[in-house]
Length: 103
Image 1 (spheres, one colour):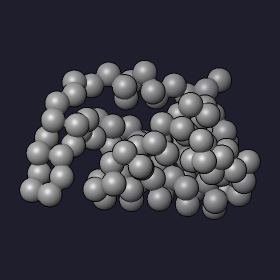
Image 2 (image 1 turned 90 degrees about the horizontal axis):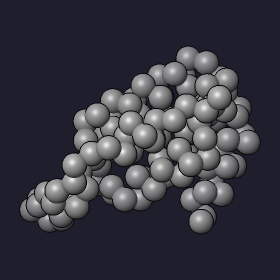
Image 3 (image 1 turned 120 degrees about the vertical axis):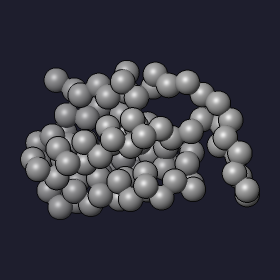
């Protein structure tokens, strides 16, 4: 059974947000950050949880790291996620993530 967070995360209202040096077309909402943090905490607590995330979810997480280069909060959560996978020695999941990044 895969955890399908994408259906929860993808339902957002998009609007343009202008900052002094860049624009964000699709803001990274606090709901997304909370869901990603929950995923990080689950993966940090149990090594089998990382295997439950689908390839589509990993693709979405990697694309957010590229799509939101100015979002330090998400990058810190994404780092914790990758670090937890490394700590649990889930190398197949890490290789999947690296391969998705090359697509």
